[in-house]
Length: 156
Image (cartoon, rainbow, N blue to C red; front, side):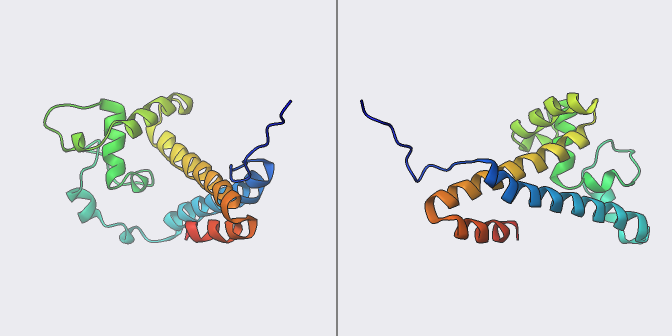
């Protein structure tokens, strides 16, 4: 009877990788979210460029700038529009691939129909998972010390 051995280059995503990488990154993301929200509350509204906001695509068109709209900028507006309305003929949002808007739409059911909350949650969840997996791959191929040094550099 031959005993199967796991290849040492295969990444192992155990509790150590999750705790060593995932927890600090999760705490960092929470800190940054609190920092952004507090900055918006404390900094003057003049820092938000209303002229530029009006020239970019934003949806709904009549929506006035507020805290939520500051998270819905650039391509985010297109993805949120597509997640709620789908593809229609003649709109510039058709240039975007459908996987991300579909993911936001599916995730919105967990957030009571809030597509912005779904998009923000999924983007942070997927980036966290990607960093944990990447840490495991680098650890398996180059060792734990290299992986621990690589992960913060990847974030930077």
